[in-house]
Image 1 (tube, one colour):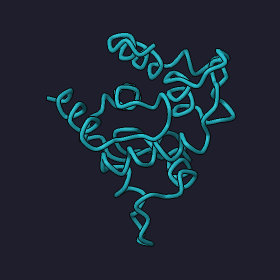
Image 2: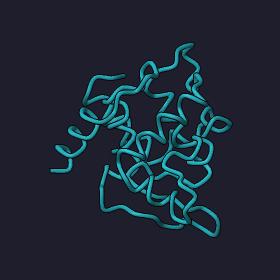
Image 3: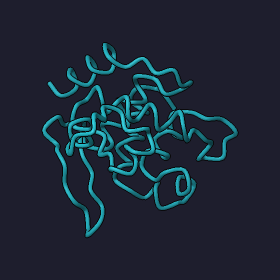
Length: 148
């Protein structure tokens, strides 16, 4: 059921204008982040980290993506990133702004976007990212879809 939701969501509602940020790539980032569970809401990790939605987006990430869905209301961040369509728009905008070669292969491909999503533009080249459960889940998904 979860996979069907992911497939329908990415195929019907996400048309990314960014090269290599395909529906399949977005699906794997979502699966790596939260197993693309629509029931995942907001939670704190430590004293300052706060992540929301199926892509586990932080408020800072959302703001750096130009705050899609922002209507000036107190819970616009939570409302957006807990909504799969607005969350995808957030990820798409963030990638458009910070797109870079994070894995040193001289190309910007799906693994670069996955690294960027998890660690941000200043940390995406650090080795710690590839030691996380997120990265293991991303690689498993990407291999199963033949996108790496």
